[in-house]
Length: 401
Ligand code: ACO
Image (cartoon, rainbow, N blue to C red; front, side, top):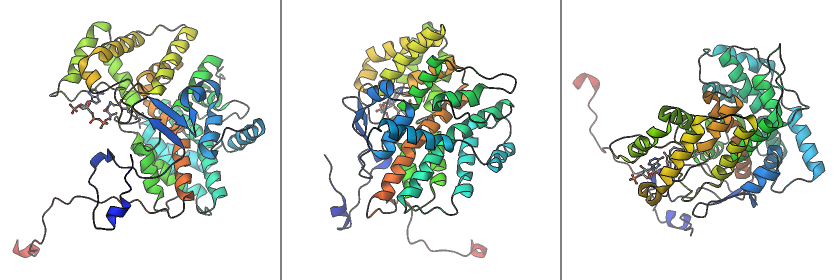
């Protein structure tokens, strides 16, 4: 049920809702979630159909434009995206200002923000066509920037995009090719990568998307807004959970330690939480986790990898799902629980996990930004507060204190 609080606001009331547990901030027709039933749909299309039957660029088109593309619309969209995959050479220089051990998320945040200075001077955000062009640029350039952040962190030369490859193949090429040897992208790996992109593409008003909307509500340029989204995603309670989850699985290490970690997660005096478990909106299985688990088994089977961490993950999931604490609090595995194992199998280091999440989510962020700016009567986001400090104090000048 939705109560439209604007009517109360005119009488001088406002709600107090830290963490926005019960506050809707906007109207949106992009993504539908029924957390109680474990349903996720983009523009009305169920996530498992999209993950299994569409590729990521189709999903991008759907999120941005509202309907599934025809073959010719898809080809045109793909060609627009591939036209924009290169980044300005001057933008490449930004990487050299970072310390080699900088976290790739720090580089992503800085370099995406710096795009403002390359593409903003003539940008009219009231023009829908110009907003779309920013969206296309961001979707196209994020993999290039993300792969450059990785290459810089391992001290290898940057690899430029190859536009005849698919979006996922091109990203893997830019990550793993070296001048002496072109990386051969296996279809299984490219397919898994594409699915990971799709499963992270949008998730309505989460912390990072709300951050992008709030930044954009002031009229800020889209590149600065997306940099704000990257920053918000970085934390371990949000996009950083995939990296934290793999670290946790490594710490647990083997099956005999699973019970001990489940006990730690239930202990109120221990701050430890099971990473990859729980969600603000899903009080049932995260439908993305179901597809991710399937993909994880497929990838490991097809690559012939036997990873003991997968056994730990499955045991953890089983113990947690049978435990009254997790049942009562409706804590189920979320999208991040299995993605780390897949990414590790592909050869991607855990420091890149959240970067890949940010790349995938860029389309969701920019679709929400565009939707917000296309709505009439859009207002700057400006929450109120409950003031708890002192009032009316007498100020004593410094020389008398
Ligand atoms: N392990 C153990 N206990 C947990 C966990 C967990 N992973 N998650 C929640 N709980 C418990 C809390 O301690 C709390 O217990 P209490 O009511 O006795 O105090 C209760 O469940 C509710 O938790 P909240 O933190 O109030 O729920 P909220 O909706 O604010 O948080 C969140 C959701 C941040 C995702 C939380 O479940 C969490 O920290 N999970 C681990 C991190 C994670 O996987 N994040 C990824 C989210 S998905 C994404 O961003 C893509």
